[in-house]
Length: 112
Length: 148
Image 1: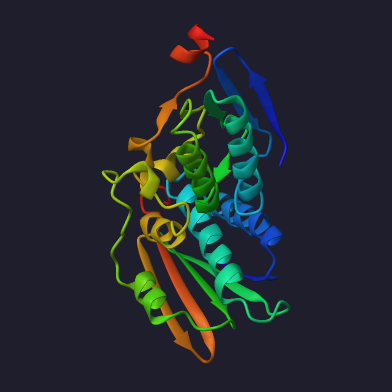
Image 2: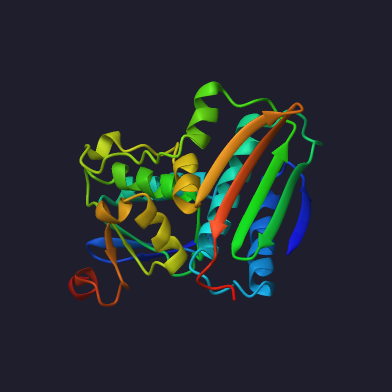
């Protein structure tokens, strides 16, 4: 799965290019992000601006990334489309994840 | 609206089907209804589960029938795969949604198993029956606020 990667001094932004984070691409995305996070040992922000649809496999991949980064810099999300927000709302994961409207207005952008 | 689709047991078909159903909802003047995103989500989850867990013969098709009567969209899905376990059959039809507790530790958050719960959370009604050597699922969505 293709994704853009932006490196800052203290954080890593990962931006999937696919419009869908589903069972076809989610396992590869999960593995790639976990490997990058382990290498860089910083906060990871997953920017979902291009993702218009996410299913339970995509959610599972994001949860996997979240769990894998708890011992390092942690993980946050930004730019969720309404349909993607709904998946987090239905599963109550919106209460677990740190979700920002967009990266530029988050406190992390100011500090980067 | 009364549409039948035959789908191959191939994950790459799922996005095509979900977009088709979304477009059909738009044609039925329900495209802006908040439930449409849930319809797409539930159908994707159900087809993924069928292909991953009950698929028996790769060439066997999954049938999907969408019917909009007044303001209720009913989606019936049938496949000739293995029957669901009794545990899964009950999970589809028992009417309860069992999301993991958000109070549990991060390490115990599950990365899989969300599909059935998402289907049940996204639909107004879900049922499952094994009949004539086929798995028969019925999903219903209330579109009363958008369809006139």
